[in-house]
Amino acid sequence: MNSTIKICVVDDCVDETTVLCEGLKLFGYDAVAVHSGQDALRFVSKEEVHLILLDVGLPDIDGYEVCKRLKSDPASRDIPIIFVTARGSSGDVAHGYDLGAVDYVAKPYNIPIIIIHVDAALRTRQSATDMVAGPFMLTDTIYTDRLTGLRNRRFLYERLQEETEKAHRYQYPVSCLMLEMEEPLQKEASPAPLVFEDILVEVALAMRNTSRAFDILARYDDMQFAAVLPHTQLKDAVSYANKIKREVADALLDESWVEGAADLSFGIVTCNNGKRPLTADEMIGEAMRNLLRAKGSAPDRISARTLAATA
Image (cartoon, rainbow, N blue to C red; front, side, top):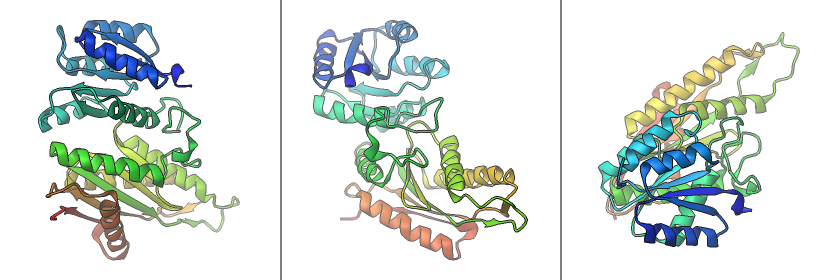
């Protein structure tokens, strides 16, 4: 039941928070309103909160400072925060993401849109004690890869489409990365059979360890993974790929039955805002083409480029 999910709405406008909380309750969530930054910090310290809808313009300390303090506290840093505010410039959006917010929704409140973003944030919540990266409502298995705990292809396409549209609206970059792993050789003297699933889990762990809370990670196919990286330029997406390579290589060094390293190839595309938002199909298609180039002769098995919609 959604009623087990407690959402804290932080906004100094009593009328707006009342409307929003009523809307959330209609969808089965337990919504509680507070009207200042200090009240929000006190409430979160005393109650089990699963998500925060946070206004930027508060009467005491602003929402950015509230977010910063919550993310610096181990007890509250894993709570997803969605900024809901009238401020919609690219700088405001980028600042919110940099502080650790998972999403950003502009006022005035549109209840159906808020519900979509709340649902997405809860599904992608990272667990501090379990490898499973959502959904928060564990009954929602249609979006989860059971082996790795990452999201699946269906979820990837839905969220990538949302991210490309937001990136176009607020004029910030978003990158999509496709990763494919080739099965490593097993040492002849190893008595244990090669358990390929264990290596897939290592790749998933490496991606989680390298990613931010608002990145979208998915297992795309048997040996392919994907990541959607909001607010990430092409050069930073390439750095992200190299970090994953190092993380997987370090993990496999401890596996006595593996001969050499697992070969990882990366295809990366960054949305360069054009005349319209790129579609998820366009982003995935270009990332896949780059992945094929990477498997061929690209340096370090990484092929990356920017892409813009021209018509």
